[in-house]
Length: 198
Image (cartoon, rainbow, N blue to C red; front, side):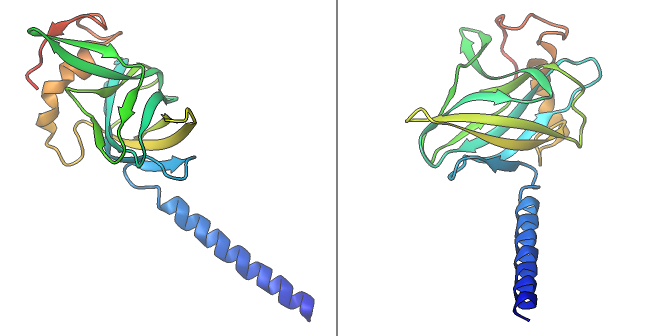
């Protein structure tokens, strides 16, 4: 009798744990799904990646990052691209210049945006087209003030414009994010170019 009671109790506990695990998995299926190795992960929202056309080898990804403690984004990895970097766009006189950043500081509690026309994630040497309606897996690697690295996985929805934005609003950024990249028509990556209207 006692053995039956113990077995029954174990079965109920296992069922509850399985339900909790299922609930945890379901909770990360939002548009920007996140799994972190840190106890206090960086909040990632408003994320998306720009869809591409066949033959296009570069695109951009965007998101807003808010860290509970001061930290630094030091690396971005994805199986979808050979190169993934944070890029900076700055005006130099009347030309817009772009360069890769070695890292991106995230002040404690302050939202930092990676957006079209500003700092953004550059994806180059794409392995396949980024299809509208699919998702892009990224691993964000952070380093805190003590030098400890943590990684955080996110899945960004792929679209032709930011979620909630009109499709036409993305047109001004297409020449930056899609045309003037390695493997694309236009100037070579890293060269100065005229400022875009956005």
